[in-house]
Every structure is written in C-alpha cells, then in structure tokens.
Length: 155
Ligand SMILES: CC(C)(COP(=O)(O)OP(=O)(O)OC[C@H]1O[C@@H](n2cnc3c(N)ncnc32)[C@H](O)[C@@H]1OP(=O)(O)O)[C@@H](O)C(=O)NCCC(=O)NCCS
Image 1: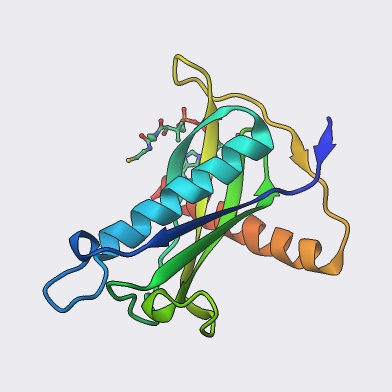
Image 2 (image 1 turned 135 degrees about the horizontal axis):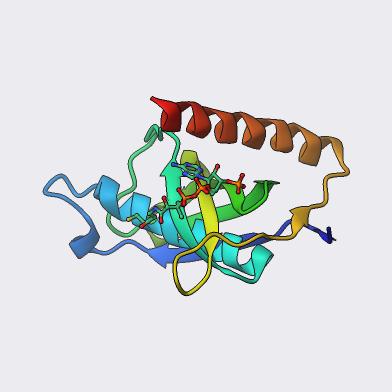
C-alpha cells in the first residue's frame, strides 16, 4: 500500500458580528463548522477521495474568540486506517485584526473522516508515512481516537 506524507491545511478568517452572540464572542457552532470544513479538506487532500465526517472527539473551548479577531484553523492528518483518517484540528486567534499580535491557542480537537464513493460506500485510502518522533506520538493519539470511536460504536 502506498504511503504518503501528512498534509496540513490552514484556513484564515476574520470574525464578523454575524458570527458572534450578544456578548460579542463567537458561536460554538461557527468554530465547529470551521474545524469540520478545514479537517475535511485536509482529509480530502491527503486521500484524494470524497470524505464524510464520522465523529468528533470532545472539544473544550479554552479562550473566547471575539468579533474582529482573526482566526487560524490548522488541520493535520495524524492517523490512517483502511478507509478512515483522524485529523487534529487546532484553532488560534490574533486579537483585534492584528496579524502581528501574539497568536493564541483557543481550542483543539480530533475528528475522524471516512472516504466514500459517490454511492456513500466506504473506500480504501493511502496510508500515512510515520517517521519522526512527532509523527509517531501523534499516530498513537490518533489510534486512541479511532479505538474510542469503535468502543462507542459498540454501545
Ligand atoms: C461514516 C460512515 C460512512 C461509516 O459507514 P459504515 O458502513 O458504518 O462503515 P463501516 O462500519 O464499514 O466502517 C468503515 C470505516 O469507518 C469507521 N467508522 C465508522 N463509524 C465511525 C464513527 N462513528 N467514528 C469513527 N470512525 C467510524 C470504521 O472504523 C471504519 O474504519 P476503517 O475502514 O478505517 O477501519 C456512515 O456511518 C455514514 O455515512 N455516516 C454519516 C456521515 C455524515 O453524514 N456525516 C456528516 C454529519 S453532519
């Protein structure tokens, strides 16, 4: 089976008033949608297949994102199995439209995507090349995410 280097997809967006609640902080659903889309693009770029989101691990929102902040969503493929991929997605912010302000971590999570054909049937994917210590560490995290999902599926 062909082994491929990981891919990382980065999405940058300015947060507008329509993205925020009456406190001026971002809707959780908006953050999740950005994470889902960026993660799916990383999975598609890696596998060269269509994918669907199969599951998300729990996500803790650590810092608020406000209207006018610039958000950077970074998605990286960390684990592959026969037809599924685990993607790590981290969300950062630059405050007040200032790209040169300190970049702060706001939240992160893991999602599993499954490659499917046009009939929605699962499809085999290339496997991830894992060489460096960082890649090996992330692979173990991805494996745990995959096992957790399989445990949940049984219950
Ligand atoms: C995800 C989906 C394609 C799996 O289809 P399925 O026929 O149940 O597939 P299988 O049980 O044969 O499993 C196929 C792969 O998906 C993985 N998988 C299935 N359900 C999963 C879940 N809930 N979480 C993580 N991985 C899952 C399996 O582990 C397996 O991985 P592998 O091939 O790498 O070993 C199907 O459940 C589906 O289409 N779900 C809806 C997806 C969707 O609409 N997403 C958007 C939500 S808004």
